[in-house]
Image (cartoon, rainbow, N blue to C red; front, top):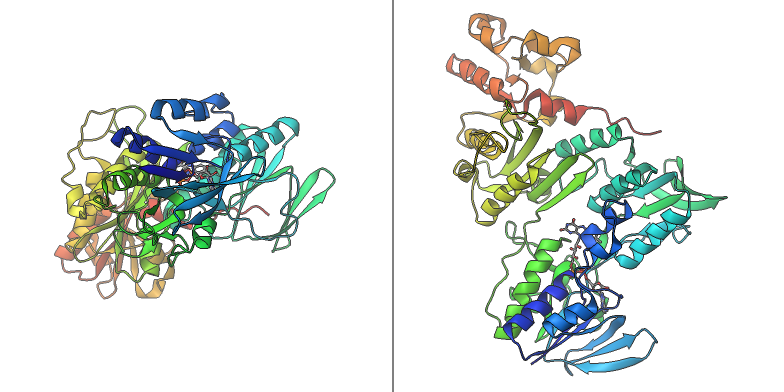
Amino acid sequence: MKHVIIGGVAGGATAAARIRRLDEFADIILLEKGKYISYANCGLPYYIGGIIKNRQNLFLQTPASFGKRFRVDVRVESTVVGIEPTEKTVTVRQADGSEYTETYDKLLLSPGATPVKPPLEGIDLEGIFTLRDVADTDRIRNYLDTHRVKQAVVVGGGFIGLEMAENLRHAGADVSIVEMANQVMMPVDFSIAAHIHQHLLQKGVRLYLEQTVERFERRDDNIHVCLKSGKIIQANMVILSIGVRPETSLAKAAGLKIGETGGIWVDKYLETSAKDVYAVGDAIEFPHPLTGKPWLNYLANPANRQGRLVADNMVQGNMFAYEGAIGSAIAKVFDLTVATTGLAAKRLKQMNIPYQSSHTHSGSHAGYYPGSMPMNIKLTFDPASGKLYGAQAVGYDGVDKRIDQIALIIKLGGSVFDLMKVEHCYAPPYSSAKDPIAIAGYVAGNIVNGRMPVIQWRDIQVANPDEIVILDVRTREETAGGQRIAGSLNIPVDELRERLDEIPANKPIYVYCGVGLRGYIALQILMQRGFSDVKNLSGGYRTYAIATAPVSQSK
Ligand code: FAD
């Protein structure tokens, strides 16, 4: 059996190695247009920033070492320029421009994605870069080494944009981020992104939200990044990080079916519309397990998982169905960690899926043990059954393990009630006896079973203050210095039973405290003593304050 693989990094190299393990005698040809295979593209921003010092550490294998260990015919600088599914051949262009034809029994496409580069005036100026592969990385590093980059602009506040912003700060540059949306990190909801906004500002990064680049101009040694608003930001270097598109040019030209979101269509065995032609990774679309609708995700874990699974199907026949990815992702943004899995509230809203959400604030481990750091978890779930749709978390320590655990529960079809069943290992330096995800589960469970009706920070923003009572049940000390929601009535929870007559009984009551716990206690007191329309502010004042904090936009 002869297997030909296009693309030698995440999906392609994984598949090649697995095919070899399954079939010692297969012919395997790995065709890669770049000079390198099986390298750590996720590590590229950290090499640019000098965190990863040795360039060599980016390369997990060389073409020669990979070829030897797995007896794979690795051909780098070999670009596939055509596929003939009926003939079962591919046309390969070599570095010298010459072309040849190669036959296959089974073909795998893992060509990845290409960075979006809109046709803006000046976009090809020297000093403007996209980051996708080792060649881009070398260009950026070389530019940093040979120019005095005092000011850098990152266009796009997604995962790679934020990683680059941090790494350019490490490299000594003043950094501005220009982002078209009203938040960075689009996969998370605004209330989670708000933490990142404040953190970036604290780290000296300038944020230009809801701003669009119109053109770039070179004046003397500077690039002028001209925004539609008329603002001009001067920079010595620009990183364009405004997204990627699935690399489908080969597939399109070969007549393979392209799906509705623009990725290569594959069936559950990851086989394309052409027999014996398979595809994996950033280039494909696949139904989202929660919505059933095809979607694109550009993440290394699914590419690696698909690479292994597709190898099984290529060698043993179509026996192994792929379950789909729900989009679990994480990023380090200076000292913060932000992670997400499943569907955020804004996506549920777009898709008209009824949902409820909860915000909880916990410590990363027991508060009495030194070094406990705050962590905010947001869950989204079905309001009737509690089926979990998604989770997002932002904090400093332990964010990853919480989101990973929740991701598995979501993939297994679990609900908020399953979060209470998570049996976590506990000692004070690592967690609390009630882990943050158990707390999140208890709170969400109370919402689903009606014990705790909630309102969100946005509901308070749009509410008519004359028609509601906003009841602040924190201590007087906590409200000092104006740290309160405007127009709220302050009755500390421990005085509530004695002061019920101060609360108008004919209006809806929105209760809040610091993070939501005392608000819940107050809500129970009020509801059991005859107040019928009471809701607790999810996440309390801490969520409200961060979500409504002005993002001091750079002028
Ligand atoms: P790739 O790994 O991109 O491999 C595709 C290969 O195909 C490329 O080497 C390309 O040269 C080759 N190719 C394309 N067309 C042809 C052709 N016609 N002929 C021959 N070869 C061809 N994901 C995460 O989950 N976490 C992270 O922290 C993270 N960080 C990232 C940071 C950066 C800077 C980048 C660029 C990506 C990051 N990703 C991250 C995304 C992750 O790397 C991708 O999702 C994953 O590599 C996709 O695997 P793939 O096999 O589909 O494509």
